[in-house]
Image (cartoon, rainbow, N blue to C red; front, side):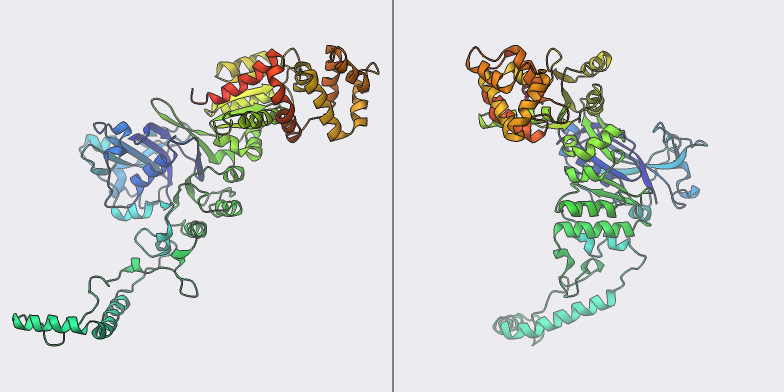
Length: 577
């Protein structure tokens, strides 16, 4: 069955111009609100849907400019024999180059044979569908798909209200799962007559007085309605069609009464069975009504894990669960610019795919801070909690997500962050300065619009904390480390890093006399980041430190450190700039 090779949208709702070549299987659209995700699904449905009456309004035109027509073009490949029929569509067959995404009016040897359907709407608000062909247009020829072909091509759409698919209505998926067709006209007509008669017998006892008055009045007026008039169901009100037949469970309860999630799951499974007749499916807000485990089942029923996709699915989602289950090749970020919209493939590079698995929420936020390690993530989270408790807006409310790069070589953070930047996300990096990245890599990231916050003078985060905070805060850091790991381990780390020149007692004494020396602070910083035994080397540990110790002490801390911290929160707060 045909699949969509290219979607082109002009002047439709929030989209001024868009050109996109989707994948043959799952196409999951993600991106910030008002980036056009739902409008893309709606455009496909309007162009290919089998509906005779569609109402357009001025609001469907980009920026309400009704002088510029709406134009939606959908190019279809994998055409069956009926759509390749030369007598019917020969003048409209075109060639599609999958590598370049270009369409030629004259099919070439290595190009796929395709048909392009175009919907246009002018200021009169009347929709017009036609097949696209320059050579046919040059000869003054126009035509559209036959109604039968339109019905066969029409996508199955699962929206918030999708229970109509559980009856045998015109566009129901039940009409596609097999070639069987309901022929219940005789039975339905008899049922209608029986219902009318049964009601008439019962109504006679309830409405006798009224019926007598009507009969007497008619007789006086010479209106021939007979002596025994009856109150019966109106013939028009009890007429039935196949659309009046729906699925019921074993107790006779209509399946339309199923919950939203169950309805979506069932329809998704039925559409899979109907793939031989219709392969295109549209799902807005995939996660609506579904718990996480049922989201996974739903995606599985749509063929998300299969090498040869059974369906071509266009969906939108804000669910981290859905992102974690899908490959980067199935995820597409929508971006709106001043003149056009872009749809960008997330991709399957190892850094990207691992980030999707670990931090799917980052791909659902407009801004991302890529942290070199867990301690930076914990620092930002803890400081954010402290700031929020003191009247500031949380960075999550400002649309910022945190990603832990997990250490590694100094360039790794930039590679991961550059991938976000290439997909249109605002992206910042927080990094240590003990191992410096390649100058060219960092310069390229900044030139592309990235933000870098690096600790100073070859320091790690632990160095910065012990060198920048007040003596009182440093003592609290030591106390917290002892609480986490025990006093003997902390003593051993200090003794080892100072090569026996300093111990915990001596540093405590310095704090009471003339203040902790810079030399002792350097020793504490090194001790705190002892390999594989760091004092605060987890998100939770550093989060507690930042919220309870660093945040309250920041106002009295070293000005340079405070500036770096303020810088990252100011960047997060400027998401709209």
